[in-house]
Length: 361
Image (cartoon, rainbow, N blue to C red):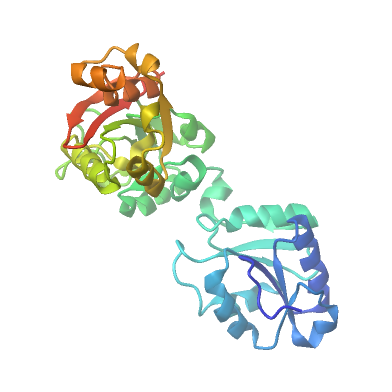
């Protein structure tokens, strides 16, 4: 029997019937859970189980920081007391679910949204034929909470200090405004917010939004004096970043060029969907380092594909060098499906940047 488990998913038991229920849960998840069993019931342990000798609170204090999923087959009160000294922050705490030893109820206890406890609760309930108990307001009301937008839809959030007020207003049944400056409305429909909001395509030039009553999907950075201060800003990944660079350009040189371009044009790098370039750069070390460090997608095109793209700033020098009059602009436009070039080529010592946005459907 192992003394330690490398699993990020754990089931903690305290009774013999609980061990049986724990096995059902583990088997339903391809045995990816490490099962913790008290020493006095070690005769029930299998070779891969973990037998613990310390008290339940001490065990939990020890394993809590290293787990992503923590299931207690124990009464709710015992579960709450066991985790009470370890709870820190909803962005870091593991998903905690409590299941009674006979497997009749599965209760989402902690990190319901960001940690995934609500989803875990439903999965466990289905596996052991239990009744799921989820008390999070948005789940009860049937919509996806805004703090789940990134996990569910890839929408990064800015100005998250407005998130609580947005959620509160939604739970009170108030209709909010959603301004969809970029991206599509699929996430609005899927999240259940369509019937709880008024959706607009553009942000009015003269508009003073009520704080906590609006969500704005945009790739632009609001100014310091923007009326959007009271809004929740979400970032659809829509921008295609076209890059041309000299052979041997360093990752930090590319990063500095991108930072400066986006600063000058008041764009959010959180909205970058993909980096596009000519196929001659598919193995460029500095470019790949920049892309991988930011977890961007990467697409390349042939000189023939890029030569066929009409660009505002063709270059004879680029034509002579790589066989197409444009790399950055043409890559951005072609990569965005012949979208709108919102930043024409911006030239730095070893890097050229352009940015395109797909056209709205």
